Length: 350
Image (cartoon, rainbow, N blue to C red; front, side):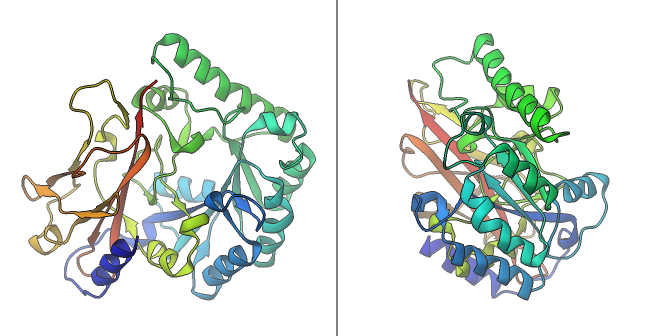
């Protein structure tokens, strides 16, 4: 992480010279889980830390926007306010209601909560109640789907038709419960743990869902609408110094629709480490190409360019079991900030 932030600071020191993607046509999305000092640190930040994040957004000219309105504007080709940010929470923990909601109301900030519905139906004491969720919706919140039970959707022995039917039924059940209890609900899904495969992504697209992962980044018109990124902002990512750099970034303009299968099965020959092959949406100048860097398992990897528009990168060693990411950045020609791209992988064997 230190190497990543040092490299990003280095990029931001350069004022380069070319045509950037417009800053007012994307939104960076923050992802939170617990807002509590008494929950697992890996997915938590304290109320004081959360308050400092919201104060920073307010004091530094960031425009906290409704996620649905931002998506509609981007898809329509309309401009967004400069420095647009959307706030999301996963899992509908009760501490979001008790600790985060009052802080967001101080600034009149809209937000989205992705809800897994079984804990609500089972009256889990650390989850919100349906009354709390309805109240949040009245007070500026949007509710969306996080499956019924927060199960691992793609850590399964086979991806056959039965697996797909069961997975889609899980998602449909949660959608139905949200609509029954809280009224009309956008067809948005946050993948539990950010894990998905290409078959699930395609099935959701066919059924009219937008879907969100947990890989870092912002959303633009060229994004993959069934694998939308969000910047994790809790636990090890809650440090405001590093979060400032991420908030200043823009989505890297690449063909996200062409990304590979993100699940790596260990019984597949030569699958690990995976290669990420990138097609930029335009040819890039040498000054940009020379400064693209990817941060993988604590190491800095330099991509190999095939031409001015295509490059690829791979880890220098096999990825460990579980989730890993390739985080890549490049300077924006003509600006002092940079592009951000992230791909999450799941290395899995039954």
